[in-house]
Length: 270
Image (tube, rainbow, N blue to C red):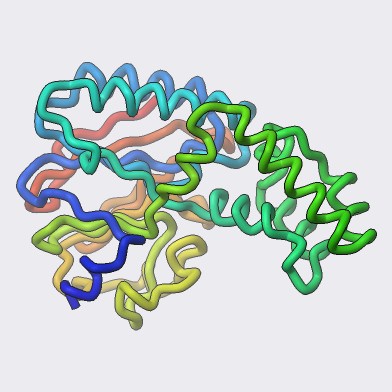
């Protein structure tokens, strides 16, 4: 299994010998992201790695500024001596997955229904961040493929106006794991009955099986996720950890530092 996973560029590999910080879903809450980054800057040590567990976009008040804040922190982190590009990883969350699908809405079989479903699941602030609105999208969906293509193309072009935003969306990973396969980092969960290479939408939308996991998933000592649609708060168990404290929906933003053995060494909240 290791060789197949390692050869797939949708996964990121982290050093299992160092400390790894995992950041929960930000959901457009730039003020909390900024405060958390300030705390991280004071707490992180040389050799640390960091994983953003998806949903930088979404419900909060300023999606564009949240992305800018993450990019600024990335540059500062990479500027430190000894830090490699692979030491910072961004996972694709449900919001990023929806946004990519929205930019291809003209290919959906029922684009109007798909768009309404996305709005119900929090894509509205991201749509507004790049100059779109729901009414225009619904009208374009009614008018057909040509109108939808023009609408989504304008959204793409607007996104390109903001330095690094399109590039960031292009480097998102489905999951990250340590090179010893001790720790696994995902967005919303996994389906324990499937191998990592066959998780499909379980990465973005989770699985009831994650909550019921009573043993190790494969060789992984711990599976860490950053989003919980059931909003159950931060939870740490024997085999799983959830770092979603409700950021973007009235709650704080949480980050945790994991040691090589999977133990939480520090936890920050902003």
